[in-house]
Length: 417
Image (cartoon, rainbow, N blue to C red; front, top):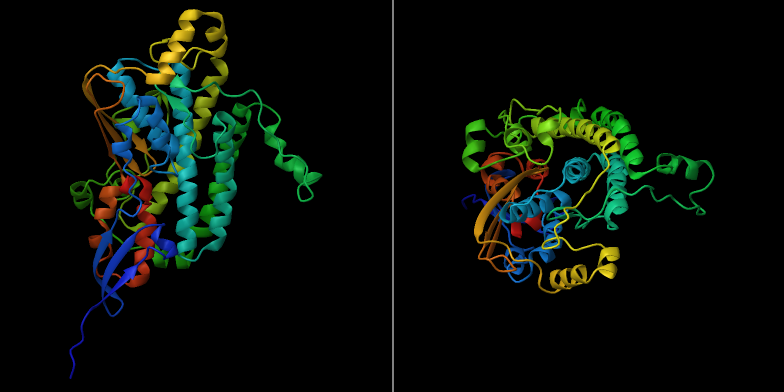
């Protein structure tokens, strides 16, 4: 009689739940997973090496393309590392704008996560609901930077420009007209701040809709409760951060523990799980969305009351405006020098971390005094989470790989770098 042996199969990279470019080599005993071996690197673009061959400002756009679902949070870490080496600090208004856009980014990221996790496990409506709101966060990106995803909005010394006074409106089309057009333009009558405020006030009611669909849904709970359990001790040993760590019951959030930008002025709570399973991580992220809306409203209130500069007036680092450039010879020289060779950063090293939607995103920057970095290393939150994949799925069924994969909230741009 022939012996029964385990068999090996590829999960991904073509599989829709493999999030683009993951090849997971699974060893199966029947339908039970014995071993999971993630093969990464299919989206490796050498970002860290490319950043070493360009002036500092030219690499901000690369940061957007790491975790391409939470763009501005990546920029924030890189820009803060440069500011730390230069010994400069952005104006208070710029710090508030950064705080607000970090939270808009967090909502956009969690929308993508809840929509894709839902559709991975068969909840198709969730995907459509989530992308309805995500579209609005991308409209905010577009209004402020001109790009819907890769904004390159944060700059060393502040942000690219102040918030616009008007919001682009939908135009009439054969499909959008009359009442429908009026409804879609309802929040767009005023400035971007008015639009953001209307969105943040309405958003918790939309989160209620998501919870109605999923939180007490029998099938959703069967697919997530008790699946991919991660103990708090093991989560720390593996280097997990963000919702992965908080879902296991450890209250660690850089926005509270090592505050940056204007988070020390914000009133918000840190949601924490109990069991460390997929369901708890889902609940943590859902509550994070509500807290983000709270922070956004606090930022909007302050920004309304306090107009001012959003960029430092330091022509050695920040280019002068077009008006100044055409009026003053010194400004023209500064402009030319900045756009041809950039600025030189004093010798030194800095590590700056931000609480990105997926966890701790860090940027380690070494300068040798030149106009481009000597070394850039990026700490991607998804990388240690991916390393935990084997022990999270061991002993579970093949279908549970999809649930665990979704709850890790992995984007391979940052894992492969």
